[in-house]
Length: 464
Image 1: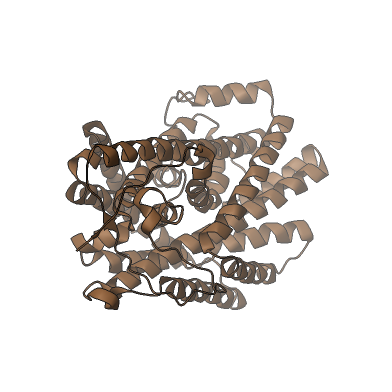
Image 2: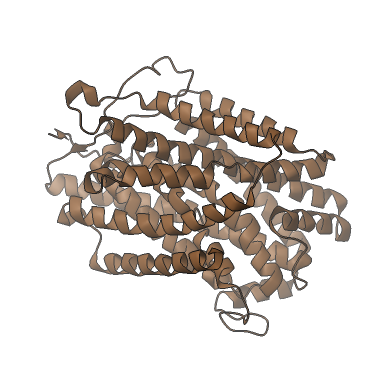
């Protein structure tokens, strides 16, 4: 039987709520914001910026429905999904590990820093980065607090730095092209350019923000920040914490639904919606705009040079050659740091998803004290295993095996399609009517579910 608690009041100081959205934003910067959308801008100009707006708006609503469940239930969405579908934890462990265990973003970060420092064999830089990530999550009292401080500080520095570079290199015509792109007007096309590869377009669309299963980690972050009933949820302690041996129950709590608790829920919902809108939607869209505009201004028109991180390095070299040498170096250093924090966020999010689902399957049939589990210990085993795997892959000379990249693309597409459907069905099934989304939001979530279903089919069709 669920423990009955009091639904807490939200803090009066809104700024104390800032945090979870910084972490979920950090996981997506390494793929969509830095690589995919700028690459599209270099080929097709700024006329597709409207699609980025739609993409990150969709993810805003996806993440808020994930937050809704944990805000009300005081437990992760994984616990609820297991109650509905016993196979869900197995799928989430499998798809998350295969999709995010390869440290491709760390490799990209190491390659960029290697370019700046003149180190050709950048695998040693990558190995150093991975070990540093392990020490970061092992320090402090809780993993979440450590990461929140890092992500807040880095983004507070990096976003203004990129903005300054963009302002320096851009012209009035470039900003006009950006403005026209918001209404789908590109250079020689409206809304969708002829000949564009739909899979690439949908790929960027899906990574407008975070992507794949990583959106689900938002559930864990809001519990760590003690949103709503998350006040009573257990926290993942650092490896060096004195109480790291503490065993906890992953099941949430319930509360009496009365005027007081309903009023508190509405206040929480208003504040956390604003937090996610400002940080995730606003910050994420700003990053997409800045990096797209930078690619368009520098090497746009000719389609850029190379793909992936080679394309990003080409931007830095162009800026250094055509404007100021130190400006190009500064750009590459910023990219290297952003990719580092992105890989750190990916490792943390993936480890939370894997460890919580493993713990749930390990304990869900037990009763009483037998249901308690040392989630912190499981988390650190998972994240250090991923780091060790990354180090081994670097030592063997592998960073992004092609077969695994293809598999990752498919799993990310299918993963978002599945979890959007599952979470919204779960909210309808388990949340009391007064706490469920409005009819309009339910309709919107169905549309989002169908869009990602189409994206999944197109992605699978391209690769198979």
